[in-house]
Image (cartoon, rainbow, N blue to C red; front, side):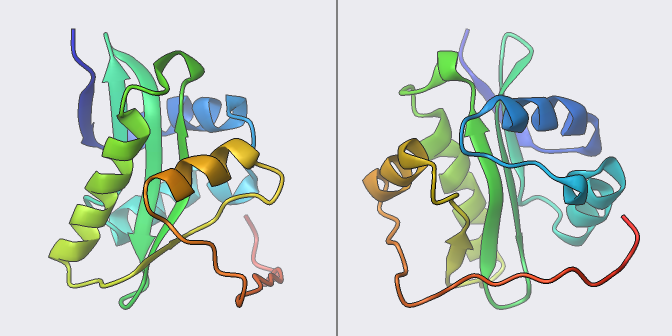
Length: 143
């Protein structure tokens, strides 16, 4: 049976978090709570995707935009399904959704200690940005 791709829904959240947690180089935090996922998916409808093989979630990509730039925050593919085009297809679906909304550029976050992730994204045409430094600060909002 072929791998089936579809838009991510809140029903996929728990399985997606387990997949992300199991993937080397993908960090999951309190920001990835079910409540935050609900808010994110509502704000960015149709931009995040999952892949299923015989009903089992084997890939998930969390994608959205701020009105001018797209962002892929989490993407992982189960080790058993890698090198089958699942990651490439998830990324392409995210970009297609952003393009349909008039978003011209997408950024993504790859942990510095994730050599496999860096190789994957470079292999499908993404370019590192050595001129940009990501900086973060908590707002103090409850999670």
